[in-house]
Length: 79
View: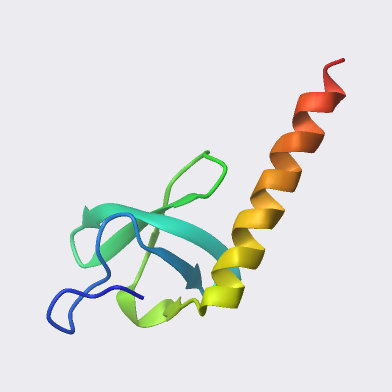
């Protein structure tokens, strides 16, 4: 996870919320929590920084491929 000075992840970093087992992109902070949004878009949620897990390169790639596959399936459903 990209952290500024060992602190919180930067806006735009992709992390795992270990309480929900969901991958999200950091969109900002809300008090003592960070705001995450699903990679494919959707409703943001708050998470405590202690509940975040940095993704390895392989985990990030897997999450991005999963999101791209889901987007592809949604595109075909409307045809």
